[in-house]
Amino acid sequence: MSNVRANRVGEQMKKELSDIFMRELKDPRIEFVTVTGVDVTGDLQQANVFITVLGDDEQKEATLAGLSKAKGFIRSEIGKRIRLRKTPELFFHFDESIEYGNRIEKLLQDINRDGE
Image (tube, rainbow, N blue to C red):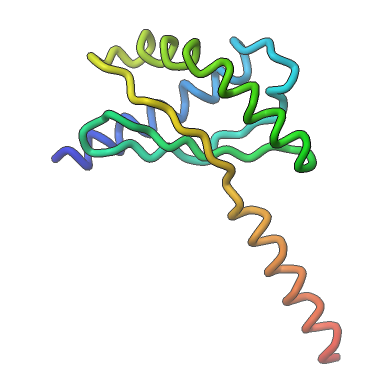
C-alpha cells in the first residue's frame, strides 16, 4: 500500500516541481531543467528527483548549485501544494538515460554504415 502512495506522491511532486522550476525560481543558473522522474521512499521521508539540463557539464554543475541553494524554498512550495505532514527531503540527480540512449543510437548507426 505504501508503494502505491509513494508513486502517487512522486507523480504529483514531478508535476509541481516542473511548475516551480518554470514559474517560481528566478535563479539564472536554473534554466532548461526538465524533471524526468521522482522516486519517493515508502515512508515519504526522501525523494530522489531526476533531472535533465540542456547544456554542457559546466551548465549542469551550475544548475545543481542553484537547485541546492533553492532547496528550502522548493521544499516549502511542495509542502504547500501537496499538503503533506512532512515534506520529503529532496536529492537531485542528473538523469543520464537520454544521453546514454543517444550514444547507443549513434553506435548502432555507425555499425550500420560500416556494414553497408
